[in-house]
Structure formats: structure tokens, C-alpha cells
Length: 301
Image (cartoon, rainbow, N blue to C red; front, top):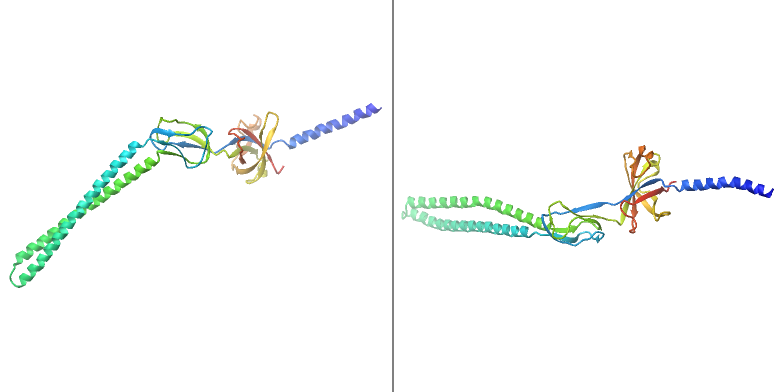
């Protein structure tokens, strides 16, 4: 009799325990799946030439504005010096013109003194009108010569300006020979080595700030009202084959348009469903890697 009662109790409570465990598992089931990514930046060459120094390695942490190498700009430097020399020659031509004008103006001043003397003599009958006419002709000639000299300034000034622009371009090109890291981050891939010849726009290395990662997940239309920008969510990722690690994340972006579920996320049957991409911002202590799978649990559940 006692064994019969015990068997009945087992028959009653065992299904209840299984049902409770099943409910607990469903309650803990992730709401969305995805993979971790980071904003990757490809740093490219801004100059043509031989890479003289390139001191980075994959996995190395770089600061923003850190000088990591430079490209040979000797040819550009020589061309800049040549152009500076041309500018100095053009500037000396301008000085020569100013000197010529100064001479003509001195001659004019001397003739004006002579003109005043002739006018006084003409009043006394000691000079002739022809003498005065000759002086006026000389003054007129001087004015024309000065005007002719001044017309050359425009061409010289334009040439000076053009030369100065060329010098500025050479300086900028020489500056672009310096390889400066744009953002703080970790070197992901290195595409070039010392002594290689590079060209403008050729990739040198790829870098990303891995201190903060983005987990891109996909939620269904039914889940979408439960997700808002700025929400805190529980983020999970593999700790080992059996267990997950958990951390906090913040919803940073929600797509405004639906798309078919990516093949890498769901089963074939679920891929026919339309979902919305969501990005979760997660602080990274070095554990998270680009491409690592992850999942989230919405706090509102």
C-alpha cells in the first residue's frame, strides 16, 4: 500500500517538475542572435614612393595622431627647393622694375626743376618756347616709360602667386608622406612592409577601436516594440562549450526597414521571416572578438 502511494506521487510530480524546468528554460531563452563587429578603418597611403619606415605590427595598440611611418619624399623636397628658387628669381625681377621706376622718377624730378627755371627765363625773354616744349616732351616720355614698367607688375605678381601655390602643394605632399594613425585602436591587418613602393590610395593597414564593440542582432516584428534606443539588455557570449558569459549592453541603433533574416543567424524555416537589425553597444575587456557570435535577452521580458 505504501509503495503504491509513493508511485502515484512520483507519477504526479515528475511531469510537473519537467514542465517547470521547461518553462524555466523557455524563460531564459535568448530573444535575438547575432555577431560582434567593430568600426574598422582602412588607412591608405596619401603619397607615392618608397616606404622608408613602417613600425607597426598586427595586434598592436596605437594612439590617435601617432606617427607610425613615412614615405620617401626626397623628390618632392627637391622640387620644392627648385620652385622656391624660381620664386626668388621672379621676386628679383620685381625689385629691378621698382629700381627702374625710381630712376625715372628721379629724372622727372630733375626735369621739373629745369622746367621751372626755363619758365622763369621765358618770362624774361632769356629762353625759348621750344626749350619748354622739349622739357614737356621729356616729362611725357618719362610718364609713358613709368606706365609701361608698371604694366609688367601684374604678370610678375600672377607668377609669384602661382609659384607660391606650387610651393604650398609641395609642402602638403611632403606632409602627406608622414603616415599618421587617425584613431586610437588595435591594428587588425597590415598590408604593407618597409621598403615597399606604395601609391596614393593604396591600403597600408586596417585598425579598429576594440574597447567598445557592436553586437548586431535581428529581432522580429513582434519583438520590435520591446526594443528602444538606449535600453539596457543582457548580452551573452560563449564562455566555454557548456556555459555563457554575461555582460551589459545598450541599444545604440535600430534599423527602420525590415530585411530577410541572414542565413548565418537562424534556421532555414526562420529565414523566410522579415526581421529588423539592431546594434548593441558593449564594453570590451579584450574577451570579445570581431565575428564572435552573441545573443541578447531583453530586459522587458
